[in-house]
Length: 206
Image (tube, rainbow, N blue to C red; front, side, top):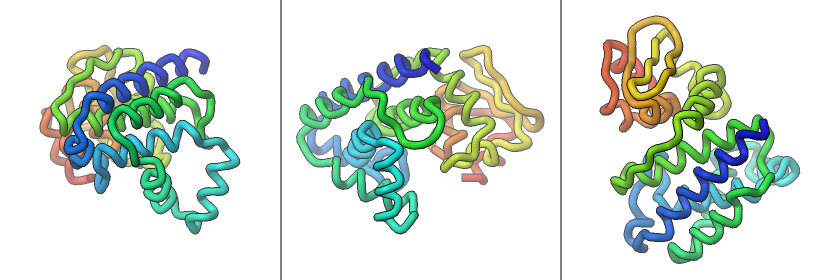
């Protein structure tokens, strides 16, 4: 979808703006992406911006067809540099058409979620456009690709308090749209910003 790429560009550039202002110590802060520092997440986003269909399968083969091994290896290979260097590399990838196999909206989801993985532990806020969050949530609600979001929210009703969006039936989980997206993708820290009888079920699903 042609309208998705401008959204991806905006989220990647917003992430670069944050990274550029960080200290080296802040780059070492644990992110909301389990096992990765802020620096690791930046490296992963740079690597993803370089990815093509061919390089994805080549790197997957080199990693023994283990996605997590590949992701960790590529993040490590692209994580070095000072904040200005990392930000410059992120910006250089912000509008490129390269992406691994999968729908373009999956790339938007990665930019949104990893951007929040960086910002949230550093207490940096960003108002993500509603249209961007809705596009990402609508993708995740029906996808188990890598993150298992569809399984995680099965049997629950999710309802945004700051956007015209809801999904599902069952015990309700309500809260800010961005926090719902993060919870859908396994960021348990975001559940503290949600309420409703379904929150503990969601928390238990990791």
